[in-house]
Each structure stands twice: as structure tokens, then as C-alpha cells.
Image (cartoon, rainbow, N blue to C red; front, side):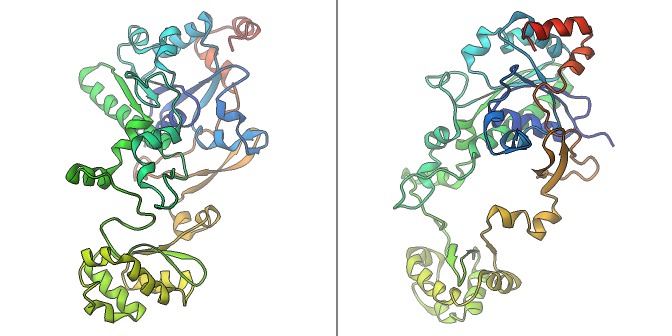
Amino acid sequence: MPQPLANIRVIDATSAISGPYCSMLLGDMGAEVIKIEAPREGDLLRKSGPFVGGESTYFLYGNRNKRGMTLNLRESAGRDILLKLVKGADVLVENFRPKVKSRLRIDYPALSSINPRLIYCSISGFGQTGPWAETPGFDQIAQGMSGLMSVTGFSETGPTRVGVAIGDSLCAIFAAYGILGALLEREKSGKGQFIETSLLEALIAVLGFQAAKYFGTGEAPLPQGNDHASLAPYGTYKTLDGYINIAAGTSRMWEELCRQLGVERLLKDDRFMSNPNRVANKEELRRILESRLVTERTDHWVESLGKAGIACGPIYTLSQVFHDPQVLNQKMLLETEHLTAGKISLIGFPVKLSRTPCSISLPPPTLGQHTEEILKELEFSKEEIRALREKRII
């Protein structure tokens, strides 16, 4: 069966993380993605190590299922080529600052005038308008402004960022979500539209219970470390050889946990008989539970507590993640052959479709790998392509 986005052409005029990750998600579902990079320089992540066979692993992880071409958009000849691509495109994704794309004359008004069906997605740090619109957008800055850092970490550590570029990734997912919605709507109206999202908005959108608590009480939540703010025992606990996550989120799980650890007396202890009481006395509860948990290794408790129906799990390093049988069963580790880097490992597809599954049809491109191929499709002659190269347009 054709993939869900077969016959959808996407122009990826982005760099770094959020934009490329968004277009990769579309490519994974079968869209034809053409990635545009500046000649000689390329996507800024190409310069970020570590490197495999001369290729940045940071670049490789977010750019599979794309053809790559170089194009100097600062020159009119480069812009003219982009316009030819746009005429036959369904989607364009960009992450230029508002004034930059306006100066280059590649903003939505300019491109939609030549292709009214174009879905134009702008990704930014803070939005297309407002006092921060022209500010460079980086993940950690957005994490701080969103409030996420204020509720992450421990009271003694102060504000703590999430250990991955979570704002970039969430922004990419929301952008893809908006694009898919616009593509569906276009089937009814026949018209494209402008979509925007940002790192700041994406992170605020997932504040979830923390925002709900603030809306309900007017009080700003504080960091809880690895503990849940309103459930106990629900957190990270020491074992003989490390740590285990336990989330006894129901009364049944709490009772069974006490039985498995041999501390049934807690079920009749006024300090722990209700969840609010357990939350109020969670430090004493932790001391008691850990006095039993530290007598055995993590894998022992994961097995025994898991068999008893208690939500729990190990805390893996990345090496352990990509050797775990459940992770491998879900095919979250994939391999493909790259032109210069050889065999490379990539993160698998987080969404499985039964009839039209995602697949890797193309490895991440080398810089400008498909430039001539794409220009020939646009009916440029060999002589014209040579001239473009001599003028450093490509």
C-alpha cells in the first residue's frame, strides 16, 4: 500500500533540530522531502560532532528520508529556483526569523501568491510576532521561559533543564501535527494556509498538571525532584546496585507493594493509610521502603514487583536502552547504509501503522547530494547547472 503521505512534496528550508525533525516525520510517512542547505556551509548541525565517516551524528539523526540540495537563497537566481520548487510543492517548512524571510522575499505572502495550495509552516523560538519574535531561539532559553525548568530538578539544585532538546522535538511534532491538519482541510477547501508554532508554545502546551495546579490554586508549583507532587509512593528509590522507579498509583498497587516488601504494618499506620497522608510523609515513607529495597538488586525488584502488578522499571543508560529486548521488539533501533558514513544506527519510528508503515527509503543526504538530480527534474540543462555552480548559487 502507498504510504499515508505518498505524492506529498515537502520543501525543507530549515536547519538545526526542530525544522529538520518535523520534515523527517513527514518523510517517514512517505512524503517526498527536498532539504535545502546553503552551499559549502550546509545545515549548522553538519559541523557538530561526534562524527562518523566525516558526517555529524547530530545531523544524521534528523535527516533521513530526504533528498538534499544546496541553494543560495541570498541570490535572486537561488530564489528563482526555490520558486520553481514551490510551484510543485504541497508544504514548505522554514525556521528563518521573520525579518530574514521577508528580506529574502520567501515569506508566506510571496510564496502563496504563486501557489495558493501551499501549506507554509514557520517554526521559531518564540513566535512570529511580539517582543521576542526576532530573538534567536534555542531550546534551553525556551525551557526557561516556558516554566518547565522551574518545576524540573530538586529544590537544592535550582532550575534544571531537561536532558534532551525537548522543546525542539515537541515543536517539531506540533508542526507536523499542524501540517497534517492543514493537508486534510485542503482536501475540502482546495486552499493552503499559514501555520506557525514555536519552542515556547510547544513547551507551555505540555505543562499539563503543573499548569492545572497553578490555575486551580494560584500557586506556582515547585520542583519535586523525581517524586510525584500528588501521589506516593511514586518516584525513584535506591536499590542494592542503583535505583528503581516505582509508581504505586492505585490503592491496590500500594497494598501489594507493602506485601512484596514485607512492610504490611504500613497499611495500618495512620501516616500512610491514605494517599494524601503518604504524600505528606513521603520522606519517612521513602526511608522505610528503601530500607527493604537496598537489600536486593534492581533487576530482582523489577521482576518481582512487576509480576505483582506494581508499576515499576529500571533506569537505563542509553547503552542499556538500545539493548533492551522490549525496545528491540518495538524496532526502536534501526540501521541503514549511508553514502560516506557506512552503516549507521538511527532511532526507530515511534508510531506504527498496520497497513502503511513508516520506512527508511533514503539515508540522510550528504551536502548537495541530489542538487543536480533535482535541477534536471526542473529542466535545467547541464550548461545551466554548471553556470549555477560557478556562480556559487549551488
